[in-house]
Length: 176
Image (cartoon, rainbow, N blue to C red; front, side, top):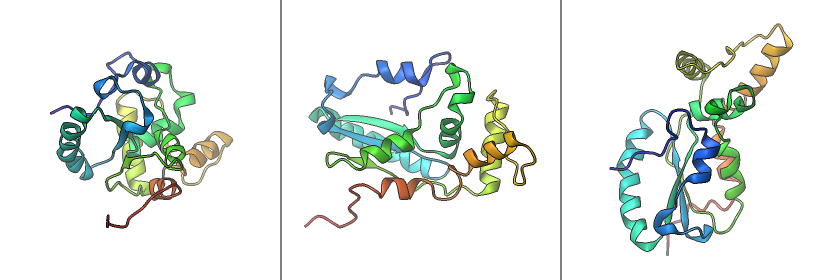
């Protein structure tokens, strides 16, 4: 099974994405599916369904791309400007929000975590333990820096994903 693509250690997401090949060498945006990487229990569905989709899409020349909309991915995206380049993470949710407005968009989004404060704090702690210099979440900021961090983290809390992706051409009807 192919795993989710991640940059090798020391390679930035920006450089990794720029060098990423597409299925069958296809660079036509009309022939691609964007598959979202999510959190926790939904990851089982990601690792189960993604290989099936890849197996059917590859012979047809349809590129399967992944985007990280996990809580950790969203945290890193809102603080990328504060991190060294090798820890930079793209704002995949913003990219998908723009893509969802286009009629040719094909996005597969599995259920994801609607981040609560405890989940946010756990994700921050885990990222900090892996060497990411992220500020702590402060529910009652006392400094301008703490207030800015809280404002940035607010973009990750709750169901930040669904409103963005449903803004576009989301259609939940079954095919006729």
